Amino acid sequence: MRLQRQSPYRSFTLVVALIVLALLLLLLDQSGRLGSVRAQVESFISPALTGLTRVGSSVTGVSQELSEVPQLRAQVKQLQDENSRLKNDMIAVQAVQQENERLRTQLQIQKEQPWKLLGAEVAALTPDSGRHIVHIAAGKQQGVQPGMAVIGREGSSPAALIGVVDEVGPHSSTVLLITDFSSVLSARVYHQDQVLDGVVQGQWQRGSRLQLTQVSRSVPLAEGDVVMTAGLTAASGLDLPRAAIPRNVPIGTIDSVSTDGYNQSASLRPYIDPDQVSYAWVLISHDE
Image (tube, rainbow, N blue to C red; front, side, top):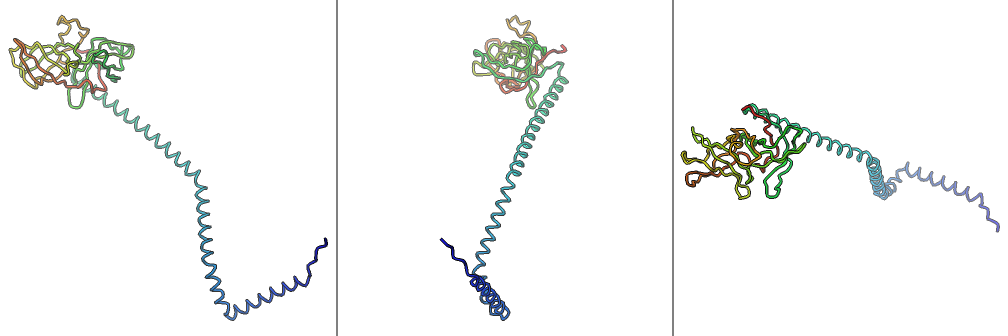
């Protein structure tokens, strides 16, 4: 099959036609006749050009945003790391502040009382076979021994007895709370300018807290009278492992009074609720 050759006259004719059209448009533009045609053409293509411009801007913006995604992710990761570090720093500062507050409290107690104290975290409140006990994070390696008094302090209350060390391990101890029914301590009641002896027994298993008994009726007790340890547990003849309690450790105040024969008894409100204590001090020694 033979291909037809394009005539050279056709190309020449096309070039001449384009030149004539260009001259014609030039003459029309110089004579001002092209203005109306130009306006119509511009009004026709202007919306299209505007749309294309917007599309181009959108495409440019999207492209720019996509290029910034890795940078934004890096900034978010940096902020998250910074936030985590600040939280850790805040926790550390709070722990230091808490420790400083506990040390200040201990120094204040030792300034007010002739006691040497050992601070310990209260690890857990554990009903063990019906016994009211807690575990503290201090043991034989820290100088703790059975029979030592354990005290707490909250707010404006005095440093008061919350229990007695019952069992001792290398780095932890079991404390029998004074509210347990098996806890029996010698006590003294200060009524105005008189002092009366008695016994404080826990009442937790009976739905109460503390009961003061065996107090002579020679001096009537009154609500608000202060009750403290007498330091006579070892000499009371009771079979108890709690014989190292010194005297004048605050216990609580009288809430209500009742009489029974020649004696009177009273319900006590402890200065410190043993169930609420999260940090305590073991009374290691005393200058008495």
